[in-house]
Amino acid sequence: MQIIKQRYYTPEEYLELEEAADYKSEYIDGQIIPMAGGTINHNQIALNLSTELNFAFKKQNYLVFMSDVRLWIPQKHTYTYPDVMILAGEPEFFNNRRDIILNPQIIVEVLSKSTKGYDREDKFQAYRTISTFQEYLLIDQTRIHLDQFSKTGKKQWALREYDEEDEAIALVTVPFEISLHDLYNKVKFEPVESKGESPDVEELG
Image (tube, rainbow, N blue to C red):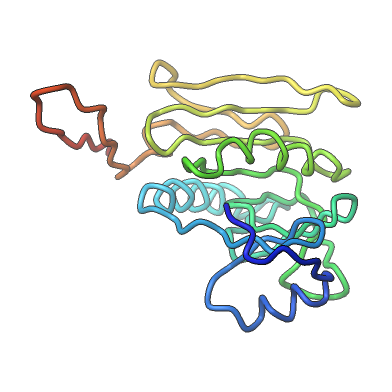
């Protein structure tokens, strides 16, 4: 992630620029940072999860948003676009803008090489300032692996890891379960190359 200009932008300036931009950027305490382009694996995982969530919550009071909906984090002066957000009940909109929400319960990020460190540390720290935030999923797009953080108390979070040995993942704070096979359906992994061997592509699904 690269800062496009070393100057301070107000949140209002960011939103005005974002409306006219050809690509999405995050806003972090005065700085505008272009978002890395998504890969096919990234898109497929987010789509698989969102589709299953939307179907599961068809008759329940939860909403699912993908990466076109912006999240405002007031305590960190940050605008970001999580890959998937789950809300309980009605969304709280910032300044009556229906493209900016304030109250996600669960946030999901599909990790990329350029942002995985940021997603695990600074972004997670920012998300934790949101009062409604209770669960965080970090999904690897290069292998079957994800980390699930769930809030257990004030300033306390539990971690569970999942990999190819697990059959399914169950969310802690909402009634939902998805098999890892369905989560990674149609995702193609590029295995690590060995010397003298040509790379093969493995597909799950």
